[in-house]
Length: 114
Length: 521
Image 1 (tube, rainbow over the protein chains, first blue to last red):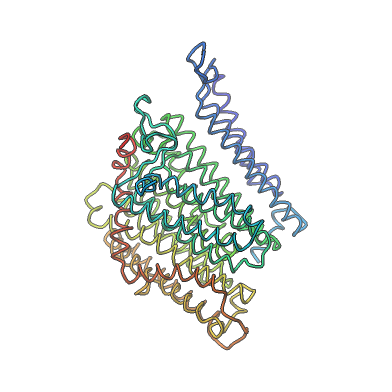
Image 2 (image 1 turned 90 degrees about the horizontal axis):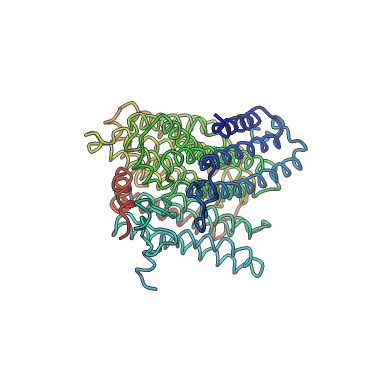
């Protein structure tokens, strides 16, 4: 029962993120929603590799072979780095948009349609 | 340091060269503008040469396997790993090499074109660094055999593309378009990563061949399949996930619009690779094939009808890009729907060849059209067709290039669009006549739309006193025109050396798996 808790958290975080992206009008809140989804995916990856009572996967002098999986952790690290780059870029877009439009309301930021 | 050395290591070198060149560009740009231009052109040309070496390699050796950091370089399953492929494995089959050739050709043309078209802009070092990174992303996506690696290159490609779409940062709309594009592609990439996570949890592998071999096709796998195909189709700009395309293509600088076409096609490659190689053995390919066909027909029809009402030259071309993507989805979708049945050899393979041939043709002529649109905007300063007119008086070469591109996209012989469209019509007609007829109607509408553009931009009395665009822009257009005419006049060359092996490699997931899991040598 307790083992499923991380996965339930993943679903909740991702649902929150999706909600923010779909229903929030502020561009920065949309970026926050994206970050939330990303955290959800990262948590999902890490919990995939978790084993109850597992130790760090270092073989030298290991007391037991019940280890957590190393690959998902490597994936998560990569994904976090990419996420930082994406978030930084999106936030700087928000900055430039604010400078040009004077607002971050997605209903008003739509000069493309005209 | 012999020929064999380069041949064996070409899958890694083709990614490494633009990657290193990208990070050296700002450094060189600091010393001299001119040196930077030479550097960019040289590294893009070198990438192009390596893509040809790759083509040669897969032609002579079949699918090439390159294992990062292994000794020897092709030791995909080390003897002590228990039959599991470890390390990142690049798997280059004919289809991958074909896509790499397409991407690097368009990047070469776009890079040379940009030297003149972005001449007066600031921040050029960053522009070229990002341009090279975008190419790295595309090449990585089409050459890798590892799902997580695919995600990483997908993100490199989307980050670089989004930053380049916003390059004209003094105009707010460019940033708005880039924001949209970045959000869409990040969401897509995260959904893809989620799918990769599920597959890893189930099969303990990230390698496509390994996953395909272990695939049991449970309900969870169906969710993964939906995640992969939908998100990658979204990045490829298929209707109904297309809304970022006209904005992104329309607001990017000319050379980048041309490269965005191949970036979308790299995602399209992902759709095909996943549905054939990873799920092709176990999934119901008829359903998946029809899914692609429906996406294709929708994209074709809605794309072209939306294009008819546009009056912004680049938005119009972007809608045509959506519509042309439909042809590829239709052709390859018919191949997927008939995979493994008797009909596959009758017409399914021909349809796939048509769809794949259309990928390279589309990259060339749509790239050329975007470059001409960029040239027009460069001289006139507006992208509104209603304000243009009489440009043929001053811009003779651009007019000729535009005509070649427009006739090619409409499928008029002797240009390359005709060759692939004819293949698609013929083979799809045997599958389902209605689809073929829709494809032909779309082609006619495309012609109508481009006649309109030609008439309102280039014909009529002289309004603007414009000169021809600078040489480097013409050279960029010339490169793409060369391939359009070559593939149009001699489609047999492209068919035998590029397209037919690519279609055969894509339709043969077992061969792909055997090559990767077969270990070294």
